[in-house]
Image 1 (cartoon, rainbow, N blue to C red):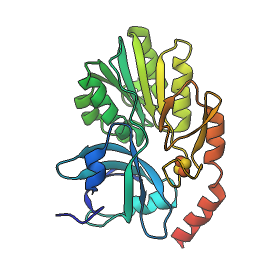
Image 2: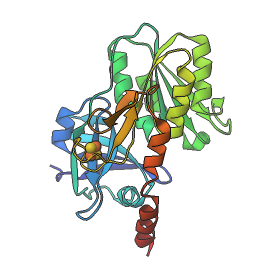
Image 3: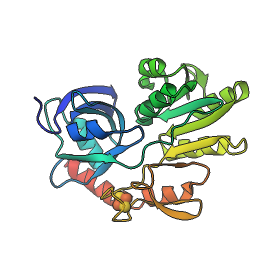
Image 4: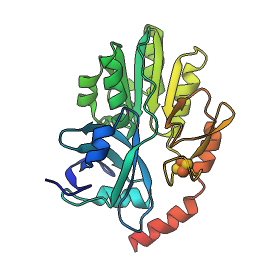
Length: 276
Ligand code: FES
């Protein structure tokens, strides 16, 4: 039997991004689509929230994708199969708002978000919805999890910035084309904030129900510390407790971006120390 929080399988996806299967039986047993975990790489490290891209309750494993963005995520991506995370807390947050909708349901994934939209996409499909996946990358070589997305969804639109595969441009270009052809009535986007904001701006005039998963800075992950506060519909919400999914048309993205930049200087110092 694996050790608690042991990496039982690791797959390098693209430079700086890896997929891990981690033995975390309690999390695997209770996980629902859209929920997340908080992990530490070592005893002195910070706690970082990570979306879940799948789980196997029989094996007791969860599947996560980590992108090396700061010091902790860089240390995490460097871990090898057989090594262990310090600890994992979860599942945290509310599950995605799932329902049978009248038109097409669309999941939009950017970067690590391509994995994160997989469980909600599966659940929406199981409810009888037509589900289309839209995934984006800079170029063909950097497209993530396309084969799996094709298994999960009825159709997949790949968008590349350089046009080397599928639609040339951003995920919003793929979504725009789809909205011209089909009655899109539900959208979930997970990925970088500018991407989620652009998706929200595109669907708002047509009043398409749109959710996004907010990757605010988190500490405790249980609604106690206030670190992850975001403004949604003019009200303060805690991304870890009320979210992470929110009505994307109500989110104050500008404030979210500002709050995400709060510790850039400390992050820079931490990275320099890691490289010493
Ligand atoms: Fe502390 Fe959300 S992380 S309240």
